[in-house]
Image (cartoon, rainbow, N blue to C red; front, side):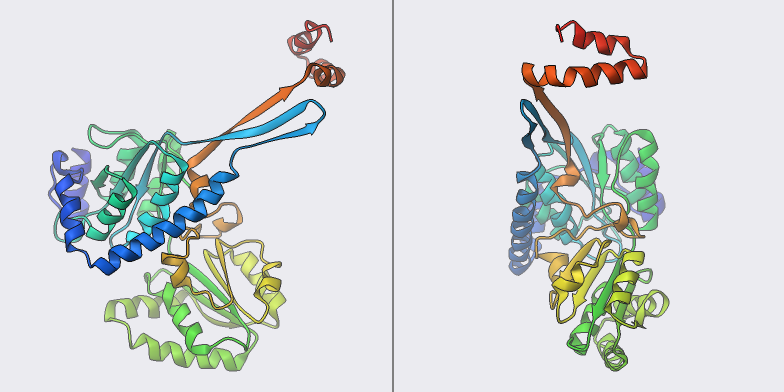
Length: 388
């Protein structure tokens, strides 16, 4: 009942507990309502994301002999249950479920609960999100208020299964809920907040394209950040003119988002050289980074902190939707310590070790010396009782 009450209070949606889970016929209606071109695009995005994440999983388990007779390694396995949050407040986001659902499936997570706020004005779930869920074989989709849904998944209810990790981008309230449930044993990945992008460009870049890429992330919301770093004053001026022209091509509500984003949290910044640009990037640690320079691979060597790095003329839009790289990425400088959502997000590892009798005999003096130094006689006896 608490999840239903939260929907009524915060989303003005009346939905009894028995209707929180999406029914099979809703998936069928969603597919029929969607443009076939969108379904095809969803399949392209899932296929590329699957290929990327299969490479991640392929190297997750390993074994190596690090000394004669001493074998170590890791065995990777999926988290038992996860909750995937997909926002719906500022648009349709099937790409989010593509980006976080595909790696969960590739990782082999047995229980996946998809948490989605209903569209404004009713109980309907975004049909494109439902098609993604069906394409991935995810049947457990719940219409929830964001923070209440995250709490429901973290603690478990009669309707929503309890999960061990909840992942997904959202509003500050959604991010706060994910942080809060960690105190109760449900982990998350820090931190998927308002969108951030930085473009580093030199005078080889196309001003018209740069303006388009700046507006790409700026239109997400008024709290997004979209920055251009360049040592060319002329380029900055040309991009500014293009931004004004292209803003007029956007619908009013997206235009207002982009104008707020660029004027309050972004814009063009002049740097002395690309070294200074790289230093700024590493301090800022942006979610999205594009290196639109003559030698992006060379500049990449100086980048230490960024959620994603797109080289040359590779646009944010390609990575957002179908390139295959993760697009749910850390914000708020968390790219300094965490990474985007991949299959690795949904795996945990057990370390594995084995020693031959000969190797253990070689190691015995070191084990006994450390055991006695730390005051653990039983540890030392475990070696001595083996006659070593």
